[in-house]
Image (cartoon, rainbow, N blue to C red):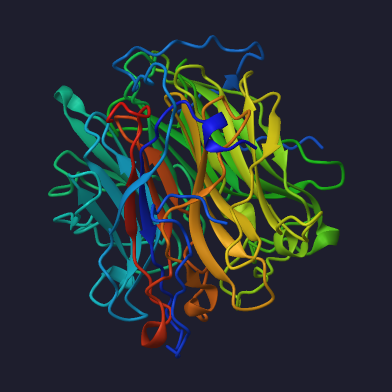
Amino acid sequence: MTDRSRSGTRRLAIVIVGVLVLVAGCSPTAIPQATSLPVAASASAPVSGVVAAPPRYPSTVPSPLPEAPSPVVSVSPSAAPVPPAGGEVEASVAHETVVSLVPKSVDDRAWEPVVATHPTDPDRLAVVYVHRGPGTACRLNPTIRISRDGGRTWRSTRRSPAAGSGRGVNLHAAIAWGPGPSGGSRLYWADMTTPGCGGRFSLSTVYSDDEGATWSKLHVERGTPPWVGGFPEIAVDRDPASPNFRMVYVAYNWLPRAARGPGFRLLASADFGRSWNATDIAPAPSPRGYGDWWRIAYRLRTAPDGLVYASWYQVDLRRWDRTNIFAKGGPGNVGRLGVAVAGVHFDRATKSFRVGRSRIAATVPETAFTTGGASASGTTGNIRPDPMWLQGFDIDRSTGRLYLAVAAYGSARDGGPRGTIRVGHSDDGGRTWSFSTLPSAPRVDGHRQSSIKPNLVAGPGYVLVTFHTLDDVRSGATVGSAYTYSTDGGASWTTPSFISRQRWRAANLGGVVNGTGLRERAEMLANGDVFWAYGDGRLARGPAAGMTAIFGALIRVGTVGSGS
């Protein structure tokens, strides 16, 4: 842990988006108003077993990825922002704005944002989030909002991605923005869809070349049977120096017949999303006696050598219940909780995959919160600190180093908070890792701050982690949003800074399912800034209890005194 003068050598710009989430079935009640955080004038100032592999498909020819470390390709100046030479780095929040449409009722809620940044224009951003309200297909609408001024103002796309398809959409949409044909850009969308409004969902993709004014015909993936699961992730290789520049990747859950856990299907497209090749990624080998598993929360990141790396949450079980897919069965049924990583290479010429070995990069301590899904202390059943839904994962484009941020939550130790975040790095493709624990956020009104729900961005000359903070109290906990960063490859970190003065009471969400959503995203802009989309409940108070909205903020990147 170091202060900003020791840790910084660059000035960071982060754009933050906050999502406020609502859930149906919750009766509005009078709730105490959100509290303000006593901070300095600046909003960013710190405050006082072998597992059988899933089946192969005729369209793929998977083969083991070589164990030797892949060569790291240096990044050309056009591929990524270049960190400023010399000077001290400073991070400061420039602005925070509402991104989503502000809900008018508890039923008119929005949650689970995913961010897409334009490949070359730092002012152009897109955020997709789930909106449940009247007049939408199956009462779910994957709303996409576009900004052309760095997140200050927003508008909705002219059309919905699945409009006119006759299919209903699921909760967990994802988007990514990459290079398009003829030198343009293309916005990709992925979600699970179903005929009508049933519960048997198939992975579906679509793309737009005009910021959502028009969309391609919906592609429904038929290589896997429909299922209730999915939770897709999408990524584009945007590095002109990469051997797989412009490749598009999609990851999602599916259920193979007679499998002992969900499969991980990876799709790759070399023609801008018009056609797809598929392979499967096996779970990390399980401890003896725990041959079943559950996996979720896939993250995809492209590497400078043309590989795509995936991370995911994995719990190894004695028995997995197909009829209750999220249940872990209690401590006696759990063999290990962890986050796994695997690297995959796609060969454009042969349209074949080489899939590397899946490895557990970090384990998660077993507590009542992580094995039984208990709500966080001081909340009323709506803030779940279980890290199974979200981990931070990124790759440094200049070095090829992998970074991973994993949360843990349990009993406080040695005067510390209940919730902590560890950040690790790997320089050998995920085979070995070195971890350290992030410093805790400053106390608020005398309360220790737990850290939960991390996102991570590895930018030019920095590593940034965004996360939420939660009071360690028995009741009446408040929630805030914070970030910390490192300029020495994760060896040291700044004291965490809060995004704004605003905090909100966890009780404001009442009986809202999943609190502010299961996942959120932070992404780097074309100039090295960072945009974070996250859940926030500051408006969910009084007669509006349970209602939330999506915010954005910008933190500039540059050296002190450079004016950037």
